[in-house]
Image (cartoon, rainbow, N blue to C red; front, side):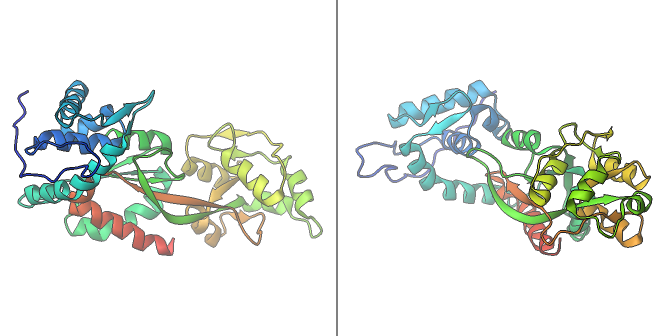
Amino acid sequence: MEVMKTRTPDLPDAAAGTGSRFPAHADLNLLRTFLAVYRAGTFTAAAPTLGLSQPTVTAQIRTLEQQTGRELFTRLPRGVEPTPYARELAGRIAAPLDALATLEDSGASAAPVHLAGPSELLCVRVLPALVPLVAEGVELRVTQGLPEPLLEEMRAGRHDLVIATRRPRGRGLESLPLADEEYLLVAAPAWAERLAAPSRGEDGLCAALREVPLVTYAEDLPIVRRYWRNIFGRQLAHRAAVTVPNLYAVLSAVNAGAGWSVLPRSLCQEYLDSGRLTLLHDPEEPPLNTLFLVQRPGTETNPDVLRVRDRLRTAARDW
């Protein structure tokens, strides 16, 4: 595929005072490719955002390195690390290139916003919060999944925004805390009555729960183990009686009387209010899990991405 080459106006020396050089007339496509790789952290992840193949991206970076006479990236086992020269170059060209992209896109309608996150949170919190934007014409393409796969897909250009239950590792993806989610120890009322005892303390509750089936979404019990460690200060000694693929299924099983579990408040609050579930323990400070909103670099040129991002930040104040 032939790539149209556009020339930029004269650019200032990207490393003035350092003895490095920069061509007076740089290929705009090479600079765009460089910035995409700088932001994505890998040639492979940058390629789909540019509509290019990975070998083409590699070749363009080599061409730009030849033109500048400087190495731009250090190749690592997983991804690339920008050199000091590359960091300075990115600082000089990012704003002008983003502004140019905005001008080029100004005559077209905004692209759909690709949003991803945990299925339960999307259904209970996120999609209801975005209804006003949908009514105003914002188009959404929503994907559900676990944090690490979703963040890897974001690095490959598939998602604009990801709501993650942990901060992304490594560089290349910036995140901001969105909200804190409380986790609650719950069971159906019939089990709660059998567990109730006026003099039962935390030790008695932990012992009694060994006789009640535990329902969870994963065999290694990540949420329940964290609750036990933070609230009871001990290792969990239980095994799951039932494992089901997501927290909605856990909620359904616990509500039906299958046993007990630890669930996010957003998912089970309605069931607690209606009496379908009972809170088994009410610590002064329930364990919290921070939700992070991650935005893919370069999506600032889509105004609807910014509208969705800002709407979620506002709505999350009440979560």
